[in-house]
Length: 250
Image 1 (cartoon, rainbow, N blue to C red):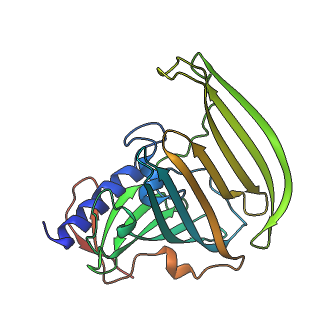
Image 2 (image 1 turned 180 degrees about the horizontal axis):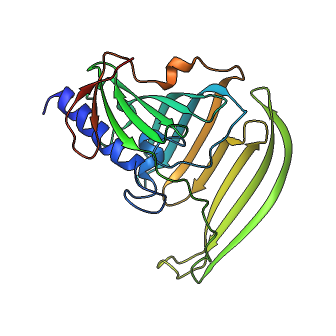
């Protein structure tokens, strides 16, 4: 399979994920791994809080033989004052899908104003379009039997020049619930920025899968250029539903 074919295929899958409301379609962990917090798993539309930043995710997993697996991925995020978002992502960060493939970068645009999403391939000058899915607030669900949840405040601190409020959540899986001899504790630490209305730092520790840290860096509060949230005029656009390509008119 050629790199171009693989890239287009991944774009098509990502565009299809855009159209799925939360709780349907791909597994919950797929969205953040491929396109992160903005694309694929949308939250409420945020207006009046534009910014741009690097999104850095680092994961470390300890193996039974003492070996460690460490992975790092970086993408670039933009959000304008109307709530449009853009994510520039290297597919090489998806080693599980295409290890050492030297894949070109891709771009994901979510436009809640026009109710449309795009997955762009800058190297091929192509884009896959899908209708914007309605954003739903998640309803808290009761934990399965044998699990307990504890939440505590971590106070306030300034991260990358932005005030944030911290919360630590500890979920305990009782002994025997998963065949485990002893209780398992999954600890998640989040730092939420009320100014940006998003979590700008999160840490998750799970003895079954390791530790993951996701953080914003190089945060700018200025309004990004509007052109970043539009498909360039010379791109061929294909609808996720299977319609043929067309040239985007200015």
